Amino acid sequence: MSAVTVARKLNQDWTALARNYYLRTDRRGHGVDAYENRFQVGVAYRDSATNRMNALAKYEFWTSRDDTGLGTANSDVTGYRKHIFSIHADYHPERKWWMTGRLAGKWQKDTFDGRTDSYSAMLAAGRVNYDITPKWDVSVLAAGLYSPKGSNATQYAAGIETGYQVAKNLWFSAGYNFRGFNASDMAGSEYTQKGAFLRLRYKFDEETFGFTTPEKPMPAIVPVFKPQVINLSADGLFAFGKSSLSDMRSEGVADLEALAAELKGLTELTSISVIGHTDRIGSPAANLLLSQRRAETIKAFFVSKGIDANLVSTRGMGLTQPVVECKGPKSAKVIACLQANRRVEIMVNGSKTVQVVKP
Image (cartoon, rainbow, N blue to C red):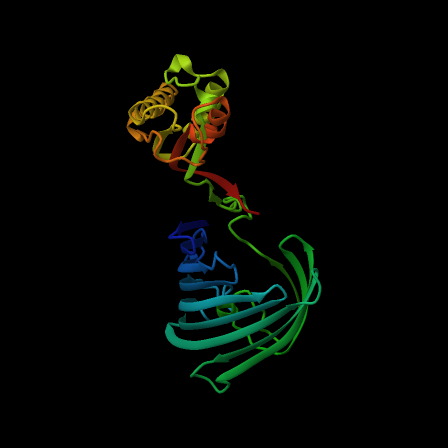
């Protein structure tokens, strides 16, 4: 005996399947050896996005030879060939409801007493299952079998079944068919014969044997930084009227170091514009030069902290863009009033994103 099974996942929803089962019985010189071979090929579908539908389409070529007739329902039959096509589908519209449908057809050729006979049939079956509680369910079956040969060309099956979940993915069921017929090679997992029956139902999927693990939610990319303008007081950065790195105040250095670290932490840094401003005290030319030198000093500080120099531009605006107006000649009071005008604007364009796993 040998059995070979091959499965190939085509994409997230489709899987190709093939299986061959072969059994040979050695008569040890007492008649012709018996054999049975079943070749199956098909394709399976599973709606992975919603998990509401799955389906299986299958073709089977089944051959057998046994001169004793013990391997067949009819002891006069010594061999047969069967071609069986089937489509099975399950639909799960909501938690409590399952709907199952099956279509199948076969062509069979039997050999007996040196003669042959052919037979064909078609089957249609449907089942509706309802979960009464998380553990108990009930279902009804309706099926029909049609064969163009024989006096009883059309047969029907109808029954009811109830099941109890005894373990994860495992149900024990009992049922009764008020009408029935025998078509075990076409009915799949359905029991269509008349009378009472018991059966176990087990749900297999990709996770049953640990071949796959449940997919974790994909991280979402969430922006947490937007382009912004940062205003720093020049009085907090430099000594009055000064512009070099050696003239920077310790608290100003600490502020710039914190800002540089934040800028380096951006996912993407597009540009930094450093714009210097002064008050109206002094000549316009001197103020323009002072504002430009302060902007260039801050650029040099950023570059020393690892920021690309090509991303940083500088500009001095001098006294041309005041934010406050203070009247009067130069005095301690006026200089204090004009403090808001002595500033450095840092315009940052970039982005920072983080990955957030949504439950």
